[in-house]
Length: 78
Image (cartoon, rainbow, N blue to C red; front, side, top):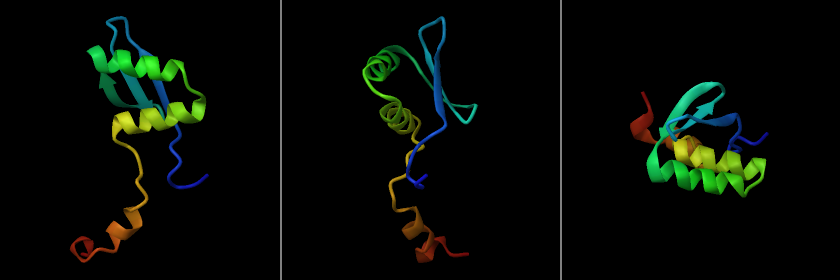
């Protein structure tokens, strides 16, 4: 599995309409109101891989490919 391949995301809709997003079983984010409704619409029309991408973006846990470059930056050297 490539490093930038999001996986391990799951979601549940609560009775109050909020949407809980989990990453490897741990709560990563909770969405409420129009954001939750919009994400539910998006999730309904996509496959599993696309759903993983959406959930990763919503939680902010999305790798952009520049992590190795950032680790080598002088300000990050200690």
